[in-house]
Image 1 (cartoon, helix red, strand yellow):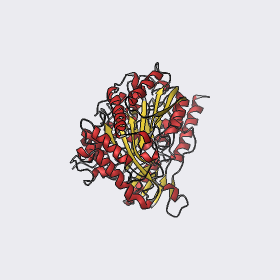
Image 2 (image 1 turned 90 degrees about the vertical axis):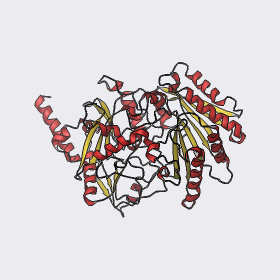
Image 3 (image 1 turned 180 degrees about the vertical axis):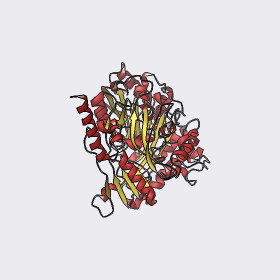
Image 4 (image 1 turned 120 degrees about the vertical axis):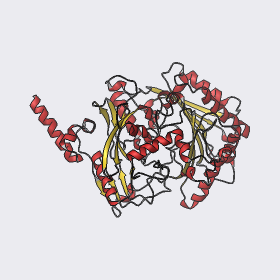
Length: 539
């Protein structure tokens, strides 16, 4: 092919792409990530769905069935240009605009009566390598399972994100997502190179902005603000770029961590009926102290990730699911020593099943976990810097065995954290809890709307009891270290449930909040993007 004909073909391709996206031919020609990752296919949408349309019910169904929105329009989009137009239309008409990618938000930040225009990003699913930026470009509607599958099959790499394959990457990344490889490779935002965000300036003009972690990037603070702020704060992210810091290469197979070929997939179940207050205390104390002692970023133990799940005693579910690289020298011994340390002095029978599983299969079909999607739910969270005090463990036990409440689908999960997370300073990203070793996820799920008040009251009482010494919330200190914004809980901003005097934003962002407020003032000066726990403009 001659140079002339090659240039003509590229120009023609850019022109076709421009027709599909609404970009000018020049803009389209300058967007190799868009063009290459979509393999020249037509771009989806936009599609406008209003009440009365048969699709409306599906597009307005929330992940948490307690909530429901009735927007005047759902705009299903397929490109950044379409998002810009949707946001501009909303601003022009004074409509409250929100975005949805995977739909797993636990509060009503999207599914609120105040929502008037819902921008549905679920069809923006491209995953590919952007040669121009030497980074992997991922659109917000891509589900974690598809991201893992594409990165592994295409380049043998991955990102250390979550274990629920149906979560959309859009919101997961923004909260500083974590998963089975986090102790080994850090939070997902530790590998975030850049973001493309649709923002609204002071004049009310919607536009897309690219921000990277490059020190010379004038938009760098916008990148930083998206490394743990949570969704719905500054704009709508339409693309993420990932590349591990410090790697000087343009070989895509070297730009992100390689996952294990296989993992030891371990599943332990203790006999709940035989668990006494003393054995319960011993097990949770052992578990917390093991994570205190094995928090080094580069130790072999960093390859071990586990989730301990203790639902109410009537469920019979008291389990530990663990994943570790099967190819790691001494992996079986590390797993055996871990279980022995946890079980030391507990004296309760347990069963143990361990399998060698391909890593991708383990991620797509995890053993255990706490997916609440599609149920009515109220959830809460906390970071732990060390093992709970015995009084806290005893409060957990009392709530899980209390016979005055009868829901088996309620309890608490403890997810391993720390390791490589602690190698990053707390102000390097917006994810501030870098000394935490565990995350606690309190959940209560049910199906009957008439029972909402009873179930919500139970989990509020549960959380209040565990943190009774610090005003009912996990105030950062010797043991507790605040909460995780990807498991949002509007009770933390309610003085009826947070009596500590510690502001909700300190629980989520600690000392990083003023910097997030400055980013808010610059990038969302009209406070277009807001919800119950959004970053507030500075006074």
